[in-house]
Picture 1 (cartoon, rainbow, N blue to C red):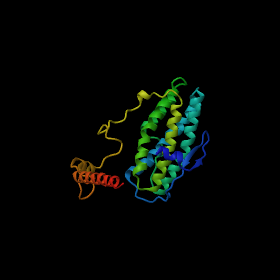
Picture 2 (cartoon, rainbow, N blue to C red; picture 1 turned 90 degrees about the vertical axis):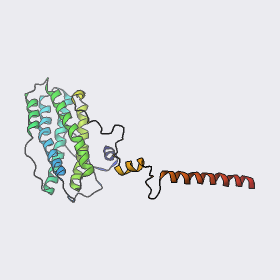
Picture 3 (tube, one colour; picture 1 turned 120 degrees about the vertical axis):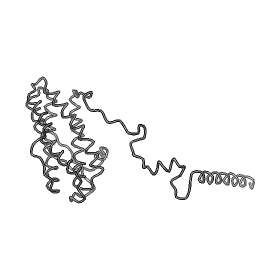
Picture 4 (cartoon, rainbow, N blue to C red; picture 1 turned 45 degrees about the vertical axis):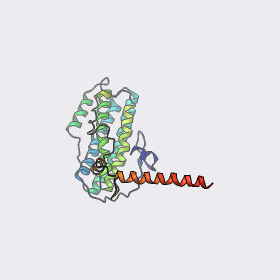
Length: 242
């Protein structure tokens, strides 16, 4: 999905402190399509992200002594203003009620940052935001691939670009504590590949079926063997005729 953003035409969303391209889409955003509970939850989460990351980015500009962290905070705050507007537009179109303040966890993180001094602030700011972006990133992919609603689909595509940019910005600080990040869940079938295999395919493979109606592996092998023999005989006849 990220690769698609690199090759798709984009229209710039201008934000003070750093522009970020908002991907153009091949589908029309008309609010068409069923809206699931997961879709509503996603739109609310995008709003919540802005409600705490904008003040967090503003604090970075006020409290950090590191110019790199100051610029990271400035860019993230400004870009979340753009994303928040996109999110509110979708919520209005789909009649989704949005929160007006951060949730309890987010308020706790902001409290940590407020209480931190210039020595401890940078690590708290970078690690809290990097962990939060790591959690929302797979949620965006899930909604982008599954939603039936074109407005939510477009928002997920746009949000993915912002979140990927923010993760890269935060990591550019050089102080992310990767060891503190949550590990990915172990795969249910190690080595099975990233694409889920249809159970009918598994059943067909185990029964020796080729997946072609009315045929099995043995019959196909016999046909191929007969064709090979016929080819050899035909070739020999051609050489003899010469």
